[in-house]
Image (cartoon, rainbow over all chains, first blue to last red; front, side, top):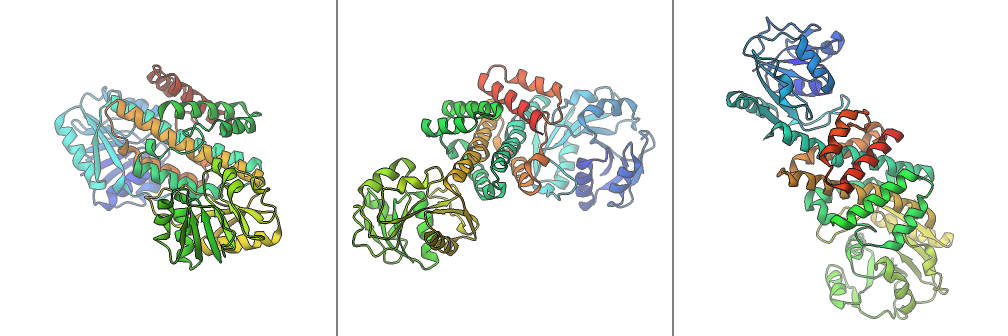
Length: 256
Length: 256
């Protein structure tokens, strides 16, 4: 399939390379800053970097928008696509409806459920790609496209994706922040965070294998009030940490 | 070295086997319920299961107490040890002082910083073992002992261990609970938790490699108030989830 990318950030960087490896043709890569587009094109075979949004003469069949959520609507407003081409965005939070103005195109969502950074290679094979389309034919094209780079294609509508994103905030964003807090607690006392790494990795490993409900350990699930009140005493000078400790403990007591 | 275990739970199960593999002699394994002691001894060479705490005629040099935190003091009160033997507990939360009544013995702490379950094999090599002793000679013996089964020996006093434990509650117990909450959010809408697994694994992986502070993503760190208030609206019927979302968001905004 012939694909063009609109946006040259982390998602485009990894996804375009994955498509390249699977012998799909990346026709163009657009970025407001042509240097970013150049960088991705330099890793691909015969791709054109662009800094304008006129795709009227493009021979791409699918346009994948990878700009940040807030920029999608602006890009859509400015871009010109060939009639009947497929235009998808890659956002977990934006509804398929943000593409409704593209009345001449077939629209959809092509959302890789993963966090990307340029510096860290990623194996696309294991990433779930979540697909939504306004018609069955487009859905089939997107499914076929997804299977070129991954082994796990899911069909979610815009509401499911919203729930998924909320769940990911708890499981990933908040989890990462707990690690930050843990690191700060240790460093304040001159202790190194690295000593906790094997324990953290085993905890996540267990939760993934056995289910997190069944893997809960610690003073809260044992209702060990003596340790809980000792911990709260240690946190007394830090209101937010104290509040987080209390509410997480309460939640474990109620839900486990 | 000649070692005896007091307690036959998950810690003894894994630690005794690790010592066995490294050719240390496990002289005895004590459990109130002799069947548990039998089970561990059956995996070892020439070890005696016991259900009484009279070790006066034991030829073990080191006694490792692996009973639950709350049972340590009772066991200490009842046990009889050979004079001048080394007695250690394996608790992260209990102070070295709980062994002070053993005036004829040398005492210490031998705390493996890991979570153990019988059903899941574990590689002791990568586990930090945290050591504390009341005298330098005992500390050296414990250090030597630890290096028989692991590659990472740390020296922490009882106060450091308390901080470490508090940090582990944030990094492991609370983290695991966030995964439970995430799973419940998904399942309530008929969605499967497994779809998030690659994202969770990558999130933890990044935090371990790059530092969690530098890896924070999501609406809170972007101060994306539109998404934050949408999420709070979705959680409106669940006070605890709403509170956790608010306080974690506030903490990310203040600390990142």
